[in-house]
Length: 240
Image (cartoon, rainbow, N blue to C red):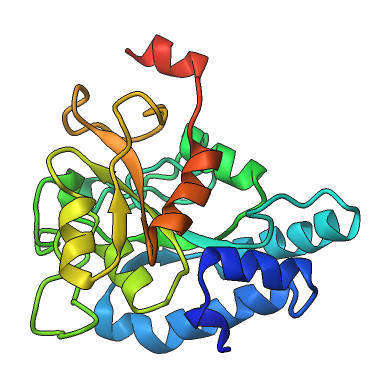
C-alpha cells in the first residue's frame, strides 16, 4: 500500500510495526508537496526543516517506548493558528512577515502528541470567504478539477488532504469553513462543539462562533486528531 493512501490509523499502525520510520514518512509527504503544490496552491508555507526535526524526535520517542497514537504522523495547520517561529499570515498581505512568538494551544497540543508539521495551508483572507479565492497568496484549486474551487475558508487544508499532500490538517469553522470545503473535495470535516477545543492562539474572525476543527480522509481520522486537540485550557478563559 502506498504511504499517502493510508489513513491516519493505518499510518500509526505502520509506524508502530516499523514498516517505515517517521523520517521516511515525512520525506514522502514533503516530496508530494514539492511535486503537487504548485498546481493547487494549497500551502502558504512549507516547513521541511521543522518536519524532519519533528520526525527525528518522533522516531526517538518511539524507540524509547514513549509513542502515542499520533507520534510521527504528519499534518498541516491552517495558517490561522499561531506557530512559534513560523510565520502566520491568515492569507493576508498585512501579516506576510508576521512570525508568532508562541504556539496556539492546538499547535502546542498536537506537537506534544508527536505530530510532524509539514507546513501552513492557504485560506481566504482572515477566514472571510467560502471559496478560497480571496487569499493574498492566490486562489486554491480543487484537486479533482483545477477549474473548480475547493471551498473555504479552510480550502488549503481541504485541498492538501484531498490530494494527499498531507494525511490530515487543521481548519477553523465559523459558519461552515470546515464542513463546506470538506464536502466540495470529498473528505471528512468536523466542527467540534464550541469550547471543546481551545481558541487560544487562533486568529479571531467572530469569536463567539469560531471553532478549531479537522479535515481528514475519514471520520475515524478526525476522531483521532480531536482526541489530542480537545480539552480544558486555562488560557482560553483568560482570552474570553
